[in-house]
Length: 177
Image 1 (cartoon, rainbow, N blue to C red):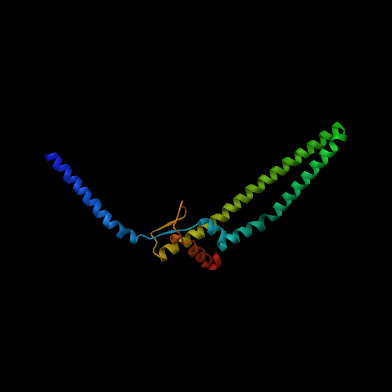
Image 2 (spheres, rainbow, N blue to C red):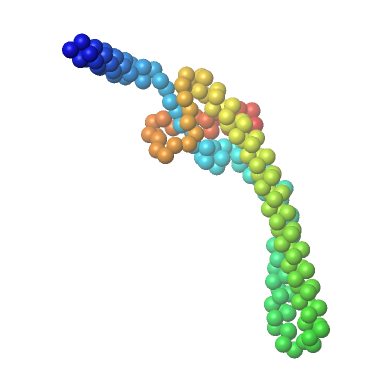
């Protein structure tokens, strides 16, 4: 009987604690302020992100055009070879085929190097945009007394979305820099 009484009093004590927490939780939740930032929108719409994209396009446009031209020339040379191959001597056909393989290998190497260089520069520029955006998010959070800012979520109620505030603040901060 004593064991049952002790167990019952523990259960009642736990129920009282749960009840007290249930009553206190809504009060505490009202003081908790959360916000959400859509980083994809920041990367699309913020002036710093647009400037970084423009900078990359200018930096890599010449090399990209050269690659496109080289690819078109290689394609034309391959098509010409395919048309003329049946009438060529075996040694001449083998020589042209080797030349085309070498040209294709060179083209693929240049294209791979271009992609690697572009990706490295994109990552550098993106890191700068992220750094600036994170500073602005922190400023907005401190100014408006947010307890938590989330950058990725499966679902977020639009009333918690502060992306517009962040983009405006980011664009306003020293001309978006």
